[in-house]
Length: 397
Ligand code: 9MR
Image (cartoon, protein in one colour):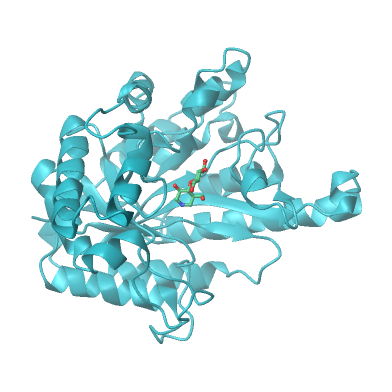
């Protein structure tokens, strides 16, 4: 890795550390880091702490706390759905920019960075596109051109306003898919072949020379067997290495971080090792969609604390593992939660057999949970020599 390709985003951090060290610790009002937001505490390390934002929740006049917390606790925002293709172009040729524009304006007003999500994904595609391909009225050649046009249009519209783009999302299969040998899966790979990945990054770069371009996926928090046939992290690592070797402008790998307390998850050192290994390729890293769900047993639903407490504690521990690993690795630029309150989380609507929930850092009444406090503690207690300001790569040409 050539050092000049990296810039430090520590200037803010150094300034903030200086500010923290000289904070008005007056006798009447001693400085209290626990009273600071996650955003402020993160920026001590040059780290952005972000959240996915639901535009519906943002616009709900009866839910003002959502807006308050979204604007005050986080230094980065991601559109939970508003920048997906089906939201942007529900009718062929007619873009509905309003919700995505609103998110970008919200971020600007609150001095937040924006993670753009998502340019190429096999889910939440417009019906006209998938049915056109299915009935043969859209040819493969036309499909490729439609993808190029979509990426170019969206990236150009927000050029200069997006810090990190999730260019390609979830391109790789899981061990439970058929065939179980890991492979490039889904609509785009099936119709265009895996070459669409390199194309997408090149088209995104042509449309915005400065945004950091990310590949984003789940279940890549730590390495497993090291065999790309069954270790998704290794598969994504090899893919990234290959793309870099071909000169494809991929600047980062986003690890979503959707965890569950019922699984055997990872310890901080395993996750740290994975982030370090990815940084060895010269790419930035980030946690992009963190949440830690739990099974909502009858006992949990009945309010049984013996069942609730271990879940909240395990959830907090998993949030913390990812945060500590991120802090420990200078390439880890941001830590984004996928919604911040159990009032607005994709989990209960998605996992219903058995039901799951309790996945975020605030409860349904916007009370901070243990997970929130642990993230805060991690940010407060971190510092040199092990936790240093972030290092961001220069966008690759
Ligand atoms: O949180 C999103 C939810 O509101 C949508 O219904 C769902 C549709 O697939 O997508 C959710 O967000 C996903 C994200 O875009 C990509 N990674 C997985 C997230 C959770 O499913």
